[in-house]
Length: 338
Image (cartoon, helix red, strand yellow):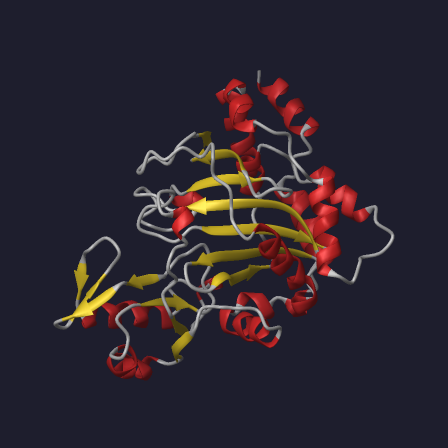
């Protein structure tokens, strides 16, 4: 059975870690460009210079002695998000939705005091959540308000969309939905749901939690069958334009849909993971080959998006057909990419 599963995965064009590292990351991403995306402040500045909407920056902290400024920085705002500048995987992010009577309230309703936030910020500065454990900086941003279309598809967190972009062409997309198990974070390894999205239409194709197929949100019980991401063409065009912004040929673009401001880029990743293949139940290899076969990259992101929509459209009614896929094959796919 295992041999059959491996053969099936190869036939699906699944890319593994070695192929990603050497055939995509090393080939298309010059190392000197990594700081542009590993540092979220630099990413924000790049996006702003390109006219792309990003969450508003409310404040920054760079040194331990800056922690004493925290109360004054936070006092004008009822809601905010605290992030490590060089964090990854959603680690170290603290969301506050209200402050009153010297208490700060999380999305769960739990209240914490300023001392808790100061300790959290101090841990970020010391490098607890940064890549490589190096000393880090703190950024405080405006809170994103979830688009109503996702109101029943996430639990105490804001869904985000991950788009894989190769040489400026969007080749695969996944919606990440927070759950109780993921503690309100859109992190698949912590229990968030990954929903594969059709590049052509923005429709949900397939969904997984912990590598296993799911057909509704585990907390809200809302079915994924009718889920369609709005502003789809604009989202894909934003993702495609990040090729020019960064110069990186293999890129993960993370986008949120804000209730008031629409699509906003929140993060770029020079080493995007491969679990997006699990969520889509499809391999990246055929799409990579299609882009690499092009003689030249079209300079217009909108033209590149149309190429992707035409060439990477998925078969319809996948949610119905995926029920027939064996769970053992699904787990083999998940283990291959972990």
